[in-house]
Length: 244
Image 1 (cartoon, rainbow, N blue to C red):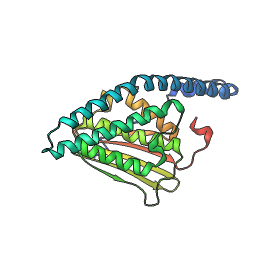
Image 2 (image 1 turned 90 degrees about the vertical axis):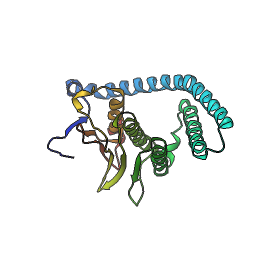
Image 3 (image 1 turned 135 degrees about the horizontal axis):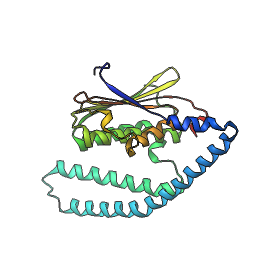
Image 4 (image 1 turned 135 degrees about the vertical axis):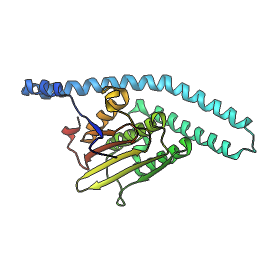
């Protein structure tokens, strides 16, 4: 990718927000606490709605897939295998939704390396895109909360690749450089002009927030016809006050 012509954007807190925080230094602890409480309240509300609505819909979906499996022609094993994989993904989604209201850490956060391997393999099978995953040989040393944020960034990036990129190849790379991790999700798809997307779109704003929780920015590199790279650089260790 030609870096001289590649557009990039850093998904970081706004300039206006920075001035608000500096306006009253003594108020910052109270403002931070109020924001944290507001986020917690909103997360609990969303968790209840997800549990009630999405849980029921996923259960109905699993039942429908079960009916299809019963009637599927046994002489088409490839299709049957694909259906079994869809059933497995749906069961995992149901389990995740059930865990949300209880505040339990996402199941994928408990074994991040294997969870990312499974995510990439599912993506490769379902999207028919050659997708590879590379991680440090010494493993990934993140607490469960930060592991969940990293997983969601990868998941959102691959979802965008499937929906928009028209790619034939993708790669998820997590590398360690001194005290930092570097996460990159690459695809060789059609790319896009960053000016054509809204900075507050749900997918990008969600990755921006998760990058902040990891302790670093999320950066997007893309250009029409040259594919896309999503990059996050964040410390292996982060102070609690820096991630709130």
